[in-house]
Image (cartoon, rainbow, N blue to C red):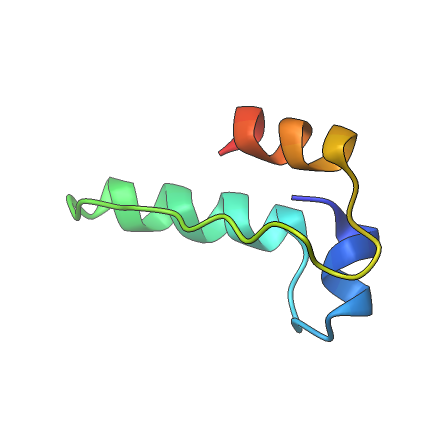
Length: 55
């Protein structure tokens, strides 16, 4: 959920995109599971903790 890390991985989306898409999926009644990837380029323990709490 860190935009800097997402950009360095060329993910093609922002953390806000994840939030918006997740809200839409849940609004339509689907179950949602989010996967967290650790150890990415530009990542840190602090960023991992923030992402875990955000998800």
